[in-house]
Length: 271
View 1 (tube, rainbow, N blue to C red):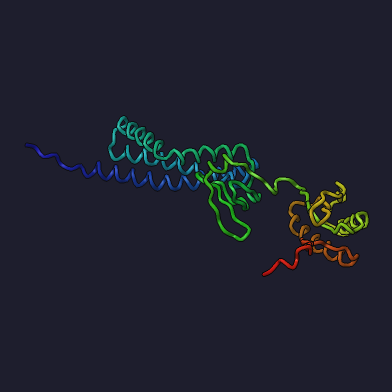
View 2: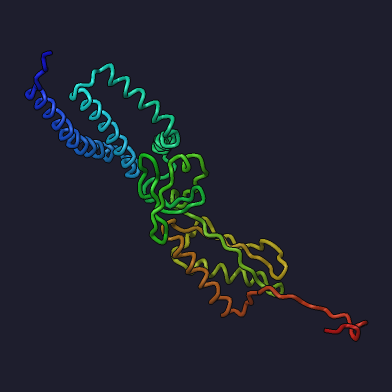
């Protein structure tokens, strides 16, 4: 029986091709991703979408590398294709949720309901968009916590984008006592709005009687400001309203309960 000799030359050639494929593949990932990001930046593509596209490019190149490495170590093309097909089907069944997240990420990248830096609320979670990745979207909350939401959850939920528009309306419901002069209160509130330089003169502030509550008359107060200055103006106005009410002796009511005792049989009541 003849023993086959090990072909060291063929082994070294194949090993060299495998090493070269891995090295060139890693270099290709860096170069292609860098070029793609430059092209996308010149085309005005959002940075968050760039992150998703970069992840997708990396995954495709790695898949090609795996295919080539298999070919160089001697796996026949037909067998390699069959293996890749079988693995793809198996992964597709096992990772249906993950594949759905990738598809949802593509939908988000195309429809652009938000961009990097937008403050959004989706799926009951609020935060600033940092990046759209292959499987999830990364948010940073106002207290600097990172939250990773699956792209499928984002795509299949309502999305509230708080910073998409240039201007935003501040709305407050301000209670006053039933004994107050409504016209005077409206005048004081209008002065507060006009006195704040960050409140827009157009559209005009809206200050009207809104509702009759159990213990108060509710005045609706609406003004428009730059979205980036929303919270700063919101807090300034609330403090200004309290100061203006104190200055003009306008009372802010609080819940109270009037108790009326009927003394017909009060002597029979014992504790």
